[in-house]
Image (cartoon, rainbow, N blue to C red):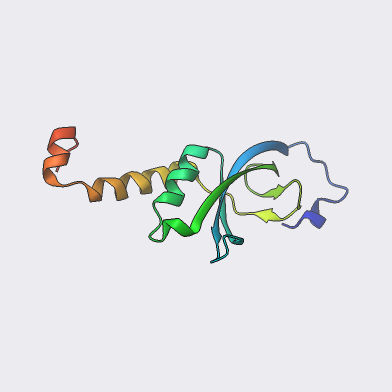
Amino acid sequence: MSLKDLIGKSLKDFQVIEMTEVYAVNEDGCKSKSIGFFRDPKVAGAFAKAQIDAAWYKTEKKFVLTDGNVGYVIDTLDSVKMMDDEKETLELRKKIFEKLSPEERAILGVGK
C-alpha cells in the first residue's frame, strides 16, 4: 500500500506513534538503507548491535503514521518496514544464548 492509496480514505485505524528506525550507514556515516522500524527502542538497539557489522548500523526515533501493518514516516512520507518486536527479541535471545559458554550458562542457570 502506498501513501497515494490512502487519499480520500478513512484513517480511523491509523495513529501516529514514535518508533525507532534501524538503518545502515555508509563510509561517510550517512544513512544508506533503512532496515526496519521497531516499537521498542531497546529491541531496536539490540537488533542493531547484534548485526555482524554492527558499527555500520544506527538507530533514530521517528514519528510514524501506522495502522500496525503499514506505516509512513511523518516528515518524509516514506513507507516503512514494520518489524515484529517479539519475533526479533526471540531471535536476539537465541543469538545471545549461543555465545555463552557451558560454564556461563551454568552460572546463569539457563540450561545446556
